Image (cartoon, rainbow, N blue to C red; front, side, top):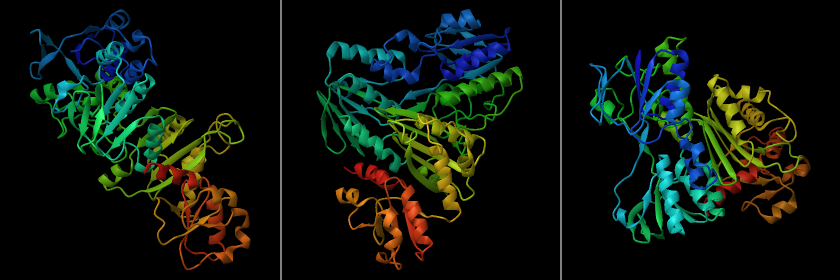
Length: 537
């Protein structure tokens, strides 16, 4: 069997290696139009910032390695210019015609690079290939720039901005939408915005690049920013023009359409990775999610299907991701509020602020955890932001989601506990408990920063209240609440808040059992409220 793979990225290389392990006799050829294959794309920002200082480790599997270990022929600088599904051939730019029995498309994506006025006035870069990182590093080494503008606040934009900061450049990060890191909800990304600003970065949100000048740029708002270089991280689009010309079915957004076994509308042509449309695990709608993990799994799945070794279907992509932002980590899985609203899916939400490990063990950090769920307790999405333990909490919730678990399963999950790592009640347990309390009618959570029409009850100690509090809030410390109930109105909604949300829940239960019928507990407490307020500064 002769197998041709177009593209040597995560999906294509994963397929080829798995295919060889299943069939040692198959003839497997990877055709890659660039001069590199199997690079650690997700590590490029850290290579630019010298966090990774060895270029060799960025090449995960060289053509020589693939030939020696797997007997796979990797041809670099070999661009495929045509696919003939009926003749089962591909044609290269060199004019070679290559036959195949099975064809795997792993062409990935290309950076979106709009044409800006004055684009030649400043050195501008994208970050897609190792060669792109080489260009940025060479420019910095030769010209010693002081100011850089990064346009685009997605994964790559934020990571490149941070790493250029590490090199001593002053960074201006420009994002056209209302926030960076679109997978996070606005209430969760507030901490990220604060972190970027505190680390000295200039953040321009809701503004876009209009014109590039010698020595700087002009934004759509008219703001001028000094710059010696520009990095464009405006997102990506699937590289599927070859597929389109060959009659392979695409979605409206240009992604390759595949079935549950990653087959296109031609049975002998498969596709995987960032160029394909996948089924959203939550909404079941067609979408494009560019992540390395799903790409690798899709490649493996295709190999199993071609080799007929217990083939299994692809069950959708959750969109589980994580990003480092200086001292913070932000992670997420499933859908966020905007996605659920767009899909017309009804949802509830819960936010908690918990300790990353046992509070009595040194250096516990605040961890903010948010879960979206439906009335039946089905988990629709989760997000976390903090300095420690963010990844494992989202990994646990992502796994529960994948196994069709519920919020009750979060409550009941038996997780590792020792003081340096967690509390006896892990944050995953705590948010499950909080959600189940809501579902049982024991408490009604409150979110946001608008307290119009509410009696705000601050149950923190008086000395803390006197330092800073919500305007108009009444202060009755939690320990005094039972003896001072007469100071509270019963004809007006009462919103209770504490430091992180637990004590306000306790006080809310006391009030609800003492004749107060309209009581709300502020989710995440003062800690979460301050994070929301900081994003407005």
